[in-house]
Image (cartoon, rainbow, N blue to C red; front, top):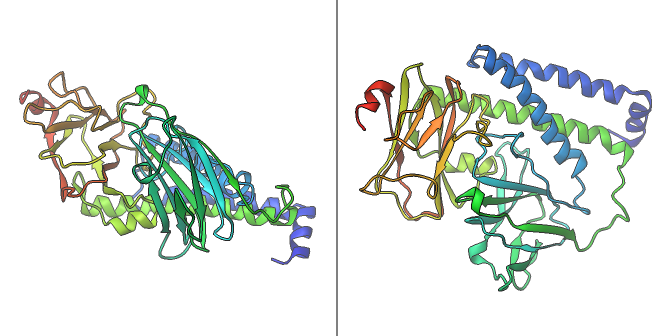
Length: 372
């Protein structure tokens, strides 16, 4: 769109009308084949649209200037995206491979801290990694502070690579025991900005709003497509996922993912058994609703990890997904919060030999209790 047209659409309000019409049409995303028809899923779906709109506006408007960058939380406790990890504290930042950046901060005490730059967002093949570094590869001062340079050309010391098409940075921090750990404190600055300020450019606003809606539409559609696929191919199973697919959606190359679909009757439970757990920085398993939003982990146990799990005498871990408490013999209970189906995701972080699957079995809850 040329500048004169953009100016006219802003002045006469047609830009805003188009935004509202497209947002209204997004409601049809909930009417697709395969989407459960129960009232709870329907209500969660409309709420999900509002959450993805918030996330899209933050990334495309409020934090969109790569010359005056700041970290923001695309996914958090009330904005949940594609099986977000309840043990993770995610940060995002809009960047541009033409510029150089400096991150300063204090390490914190989370079990895992990684930085990744991504390019290709919006391309048919999805995002691609353009640079990765984690805390185990960084020089951190005795007081916990550090500096990390981000650029398309090599830099001395801690350096996170980019490429010319890098547009997004993802920071992952993973808790072991959330109540006992603190996240890193991070700041970022562009070292060579060209603009004198970060004022909103009026004629660019319509494009930014379109990108926000594009994020909403693409994210919701990807989730529906994945859930339909998992329902047909891996229902109540947890095989190793095609890692390239999840990396193209922004996944961390250091993580091995096991993503699937759970569905249980009122008296059923899903028993997940982890035998011969491999060496890893951390492992975890979580459950989500149909829209792939992690269930409310602020108040309920809907996930378990290497450090929160209770283990059997032989070192294995038994995890139960169920509507009701399976009893003290099964302390690793993931509460469905009344949902009858949804997404689930297992992870092994930085493991040299992750298993081909997490073993699962659908059982009657009453029968499970007899195994105690």
